[in-house]
Structure formats: C-alpha cells, structure tokens
Image (cartoon, rainbow, N blue to C red; front, side, top):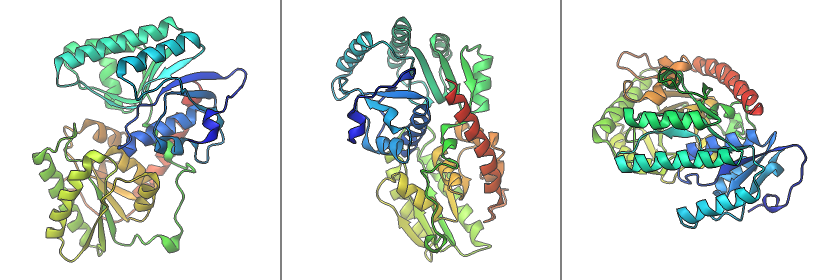
Length: 387
C-alpha cells in the first residue's frame, strides 16, 4: 500500500466522508465508477475508506490525482473479519470520531433478492444503519444507482430508506420517473458516473502508429440480463445478434480480427462459449480470446485498438465510447431497462441492435456521444463539488 495512505493528514475546514471498502474485485465496471466518484470527492473532501479496499481501486483513485493525499484508509476497521465484528468496529470508530459529514453507499444497480427473508433482513438492516448515522449527524448518500425492480411490499421499504437518506442519485430518466411516480423523497437524476471518464487523464490516447484497429471488432457479452448464471435463451439471442452484426460489417469492409474479452469475472464462461461459436461461424477471421479479466489499462488499450465494440454491458459501452470507439448494443430491448434507458437518454438509439438497423463502420456518432458525454461530465463534476 502506498505510504501516503497511512500518513496522518491535517487540513482545516475540510469535510470528511466515509466510504465503503467492500467493492468487488472482479468487476472492472464497479471498480471504475467507485474510483471515479472517489477521485471527484477527494477534490474538496477527505475520503476515508472503512477498511482496506482492493489495490486496483486504489491505483485508479490515486493515479495522476493531484488530491491523492485526501484519501485515507481507516486501518482500525478490518473488513476481513466477520460481518458483525466489522459493523461493531465501524460503529465504535464513528462514536469516537463522529466528525464525518457524509457516508456513501457504493454506486451500481440495487434490486430485490429472490428470498423474501433476505429482502426483509437487508431492508431492516439498512434502515437501522441510516438511523444510526443520523444520530451521529452523518448523512447517507447513494450516488449513481439504478433502483429496482422490487415487489410492491419492498418498494415501501425503499421509500422509507429514501426518506431517511440525505440524498439518492439515480442515473437514467426512466428510473427517476418511476421513483417520482412512487412519491420518493430526497432523490434526483444525474448521469452515470462513467461519464467522468471523458477527457479524463486516466485514458492515455494511443499513438497512431501503435493503434492497429483497422477491421478489428471486440465483443464483450454478459450471459444474462440479471444475475451471474447463464441464461441460455438470452445468450442464444445475443449471440445471433452479434453474428448478424459482424456479417453486416463485413458487407462494406473486411473484418480482420474478432477479440473476445470480459470486464466481469462472471462473464468468463460466456466468453469461452462464444469463442467456439464464432470460430465455427467465421472460419476465415482470426478469433482471439482474452482469457483473463481485463484491468483498466488493458481495457483502455483494447477498446482504442478496435474499430467497433459489440456489447450488452453498460460500462463496456460507455468505456469504449469514451475511448472514441463506436459501440453497438446487443440485448433484449424490452427487458434490459438500465442499458437501453441510458442509451436512449443519450439519443444513441441507432447503436441499439434491431433486425432493421443499418450497421456500418461510420464513427460520426461517436463525436455526438463525446459532446453529450462531456456535458454530462461537467454536470457531474459541478454537482459532486456541491455535496
């Protein structure tokens, strides 16, 4: 761990923010949006992690960050201990040092569990946690989330959680309208945190002489809309769409290589299955499977070295587009609400696959995306600075 993390830091009149350290190591999208949020928060606040976060997250937070000294790890909290022990240690620390302003939950998608008992326990725990923070004078924030679906019974619990919270920020218009119709308090709409990648010094542009992207297609697919288990019916649908897309691209320009990659460990099985299918379909095209999960630098290099990316992952789509690479979406356009809603908010409907869609290599739409995304980035930076 870098030395600056452990050094005591003294600064007057700076807000302290408590941030969770239990962030999935095997999901680059989750790591990315957490890192981008913490980087922004660290500009005007001291961000304190509840225990040791994973190294890839720390590296992304501190790399080329002029405010990295505003990041601290609370070593008194050991997240490797049991859930109960960790919570007791956290509460004890906060009682002794209750000078925190806000506590953040991790961004991402929050929905109901299959088990009724698990939903009850999770809801009651979250309510008791927020009430404890309120007693200590600490506001509770969820930023960059999608909320739902839940049964009507558990929507009531979410409504209570929102009312007790300092702020809940959702990331697409459809979700914001849903919460508004349900009468939620303390909620607002802001763009997905991944838009902070646009014009960010984390992405190092490749030199033209090293960027051999001509005719290269990269495919990154999730095998289901929700959950980590492979949905065979859905997988067959998106595989068919992907094959159709590649054939349509081949009509106007040679496809020289198809990369198969994944940002989330749960997509590994999908990638390996896809390799056999694409080798069978495209016998005269090089099919290259990236067997290990992508880290940030590998993903950045891969997307910049591709002419087109095909995906059903939100943060693959946004990451690749931020790398100036045209990205098509293959998915169930009715049921994949989060991804389709954000693409529609961007007016990027022509990048969502349908049978009638005209597929081409033209990248003009990427410039339209970057203009909108840069506006979103500025909106996020301004709002986070005012928290």
